[in-house]
Length: 409
Image (cartoon, rainbow, N blue to C red; front, side, top):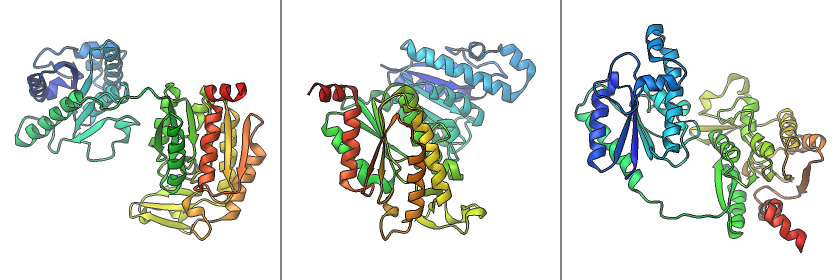
């Protein structure tokens, strides 16, 4: 049976952790308790004590107590917990993680969780789980569970919540993955306005024997894909939807950061890149639009998302940025341009159709893309089936085995 690593500050959450440990062990799973508490002594001996965690984080527990700096202690214990969790998992001693805590305990436990591989069960019962949790989750599959009441004693509410967390983590451990595959992995990026294209690309690639991971271009999606490329999971990329660069440039809410498009280029991963949804910047509800953009062309995607059309100037800059990223590529790289529109909203008769803005994007790419990038222009809309087919075939042709087969024929 799998072993669950329990993470918390035993000096303040000892009672709760002891109770959770007993429930997990009653279900037949082993536990290992990691104590991240700094200020006081634990009510029971943990498997991994706070002194060990502190040392793994680069300081002694005694020095942290003497310094009495909450921020420094949190940083050290988070670093130590992450290092130990990774070591424990590598040694086969950890199959799941369950954390309990407030804001500091959450920061420490989720740092450890982020150090572990995708798919490993990880649940964080937290007092801050009902608010923004991006800094805790990052681009991992951590499950956040709101504690409702503070993690401060056992009562009729906390017992139910903690029991649910135990049931969840044990259920994750007990659940077999029903379908395994050894097919090679490819990645693609999609937005609602590029869905027809990417879905067809996916089907074409799957019909050729590949497994395709689709990443929603919401900032976190782009970062997740970049991380998996760097980790060596992805053999090729259909990067159809590069819209996250619009948000990075104009201050939208779905930026993937300035490293977007770096991973495939730097690792030599074959990539076919297009300009999907470069016609839009994402904001929240209409009343959240920055004052400087109030006069721009806006479109209500839904009550929570407002889209802003990119301008001629912004598209020219986007072309320069994307060209510079692709010019750094060390592997097979193709840029494919749909000359009749870059999203569902940029089709003839749709609100974001702006031929001048698209032309500025295409012209900037033409001027700046280097000789290492294969250039393809098609007189098609991005969601036209022949455009999707061209992306799929171009990516397949750039993969090493497919290239060898073509040359041998």
